[in-house]
Image 1 (cartoon, rainbow, N blue to C red):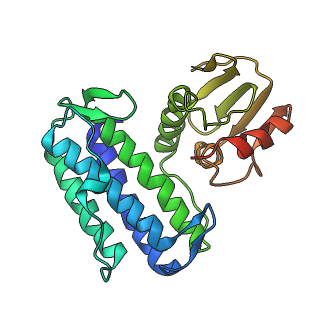
Image 2: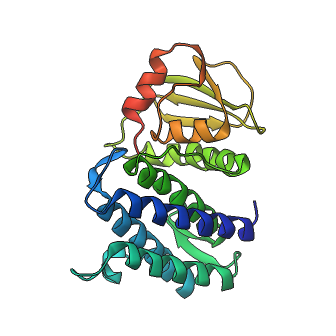
Image 3: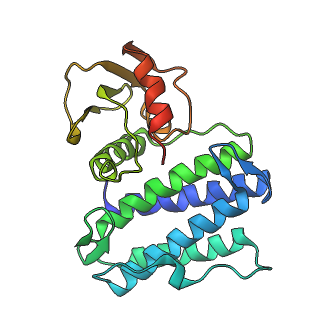
Length: 245
């Protein structure tokens, strides 16, 4: 996917987030993030938009702490604050050079700003699903190519996340396979960390499903119902228990 496609998906899913959040109500608990209300979710997403915008607009070569950029006023509607930050972030990305070097948390150093186009597309997709869960709505990630790309990004974050001592991982190997668009990944948890390969290979458990269902499962935004599981089913439950973002 190119930068313009990612921007289209950010715009689309930000609108869906807003609709679901308004329907749910600000004080409603988010089932997929039970420590948050919809208001908390909106503030978090607004912070991320504002933070990313500041990084990209300034072409920052170093980390900027999100807390230095401010939060909504006490009497301010968090959804309107989110909307403003989303619009400003999209404007910044629309005029930015995707090849300009900007700090990002994955590389821990300056790298092409296109990282943020991709990251924001998947960030808003997952939190849109959170808002929809609060509103009692079923979520789907569309198009399937976006969901498959989201799976790829998510899985390739795991080795970096696994270095955090607070991050618990399951053991053994997983084969994930999308059924509606091309996509296969093998994830092997071992003593030294996590290895990710894009390939068809045997694993302790294989999990197959549409790209949308598989991405939402991997992020713990849906259960494993409807997914095909071959092998050790207890490992599917272990993923749900341990892999939380």
